[in-house]
Length: 487
Image 1 (cartoon, rainbow, N blue to C red):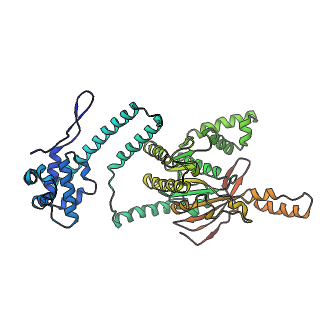
Image 2: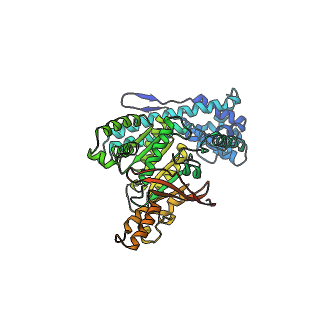
Image 3: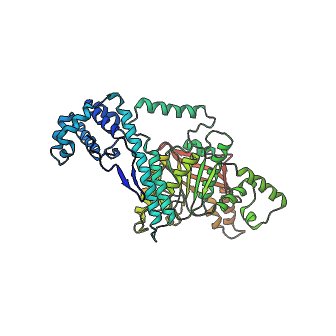
């Protein structure tokens, strides 16, 4: 008996038979009814929806219910189960269940049958996706752009590409081997870091590098240099990868505020030691131009991918990040900045706190899904400016609750020189002399305040900051103030 239905679908030109294998479905169900242990193996990835023949999917669902209740699932118990519904007539009064068992060749092949069923399910989904894309493209909607259709198609395609990566529990022995490899990697590494390098020694030593699946928030008030620091980290990681150094990685930089040209100009200014405004205005000498040409050629080789699209939705960002991961294997993602993203809802800003919560949760899930660190820049509230001590605190994060909660690491960029330079008293007075002394102590000095770190200490890392080229670097006489605290 073959109770299959819906094996053919209408198209414009002909009836198309969707990919399926009725024999594999029947053989799997028969094998499970003969030996319920087979169910435990295939249930890790196989669901009722994966069956093509509707009644076969219902039988699999019934088996799942009985097994989960500690009962035996065989033709007798399943017949009793279906007597409570209208499905018994589709089973020929239970004869179909008996035929499934009698037709079994080998229960050893149950997993192979399940794989065939799942493979055909994926193929059907690809056909449906293709037809859906074609249908949506043909039926134009005024409020839906072609880019939105592409985004949805890419997201669904990526879901299907990951669908065969089975999840489930990991034994302690398996997990411990993976953990030991990380320890071994750090032990043998000259830099003693386990993640992607920031290129800043003290920061790497405190964080252990930028580690996989971490969501890292880098926040600061305007003019503190958070974009400059993020750009430096991106360049350092990509350059290290190009040179084959420990901790190097391919980097995706989502620049929602600055154009790719502006970012590259900033990098050229840093590497050539020429002020970026001079480059923009063309106020350079011939030897400067030759140097810029040389550095441009060198920079073109580094694996740094820049997306300059403004006002991205978090779903669009996810789709593009997945594509970059699939195509180029990116190891680090940087987003500049968090508040310029918007959620998936069409009704934006109705509740900005909830929208930010959705965005941070999505970014954390993306970091875990792609197994890469994500650095998201964030603004701080103006409350900082009202305090005498303007060093940022966790409470200063804009729409802070979810950001602090979802982040694995929260770092603040702070430069006392910025504030002190605006307090200059009258020249020639005693106060001016005192001010000069204070300026001398904070000149070219920046702090990265690690306010939260799930896996290590919090504290402050001091860096060198060159305002002429907006570049962060290692501080030669670096001293680190740390607290033996962790989240």
